[in-house]
Amino acid sequence: MKPEHPHPLAARPAVRALTASKIRELFNAGIGRADVLPFWVGEPDEATPEFIRRAGTDSIAAGEVFYTHNLGIPELREALAAYVSRLHRPTRPGEIAVTSAGVNALMLASQLLLDPGDRVVEVVPLWPNLQEIPKILGAEVVTVPLEFAASGWRLDLGRLLDALSPDTKALYLNSPNNPTGWTISRAAQQAVLAHCRERGIWIIADDAYERQYYEATHVAPSFLDIAEADDRVISTNTFSKAWCMTGWRLGWLVVPPGLVDDLGKLIEYNTSCSPVFVQRAGLAAVREGEPVIAHMLERLRRARDLVVGSLNGIPGVEAALPSGTMYAFFRVAGVRDSLAFCKQLVSDVGLGLAPGSAFGPEGEGCVRWCFASSEARLRDGIERLRRALVLRRA
Image (cartoon, rainbow, N blue to C red; front, side, top):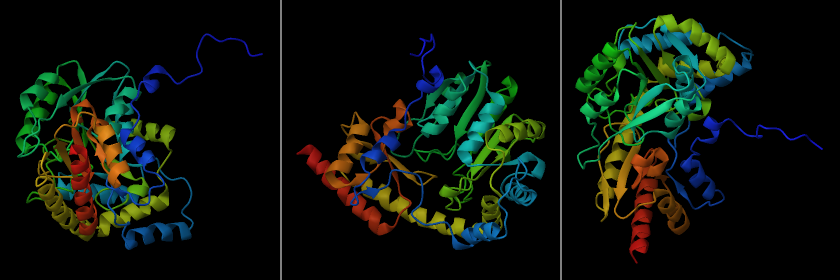
């Protein structure tokens, strides 16, 4: 007989308190339903381009299946430094770290800076992973909500600056924003950077969707455009969205040079390194992938206009035109429990959308639609939503 122990057989309290993914819960409810149209997860329906896949398989064939440098192979760090320099500001390979996915980059940045009890601020609604990462490390998360308007989601800049008190360790800002498609303006960025500089607050910028930006520049405003190399700014990014590489799990960080050695230690004790063959695929994407980005952006623009225009033609639905990302985050009149509503969509009409509550309580009453799909599938999805709302009113 085992002796009684004063400590329960359980994860630590901060982990037990994490919010489980409502998108995953919904996804599980649809398993086995071949008739479901899935628009709930954030990935395109196009496979990784062949030249990128070939770079990965060629690397495997060449036997590149061993450990490599914690911070990434030199060729990829150099290529990423040139890429960031072209889009934003001069950046050296020594400011780049390759990571095992964008979410891994966010976790590493958080591990680099946060202590238990630290206060961080986030603009919400927001991708749930980014909301939970600071909590895993014992930080306190304070949220500042975006405001919905038919003309687009809006940030109350004064409210954000008020929340960024001197005892704040870091601001997490995802722009363009998942799920709303909101993008911070250059003027707001400058105000935030000046405010954080004065108070010694770190800015962790999640730039995953910077190349899915529909304004004339086709590159979203970035803190890297206006920050100095020694500012308290860390940019995290991913290969998943721009180059259709969600399954490859590859990302990168741009950090002040003084953090790189300690970042290398964290990578060693987390994942050691990203696989070389995955990095070779990433290298091909960075060097040869601009046509992929241009193709995807034009495809997403057409899809965005179709979906948002169609949604606004449905009684009881309000959708703002997103300036970035691959998502429409729209309101449905009368919906108070978006998870239950989305489960009903799966059950009644085989339509898979993401509940707004998955992105925090500020997202309740809304639904996210990933429109990175074919026109035919999107039109089918719109008609299914129309039918579901008719059934709901009956």
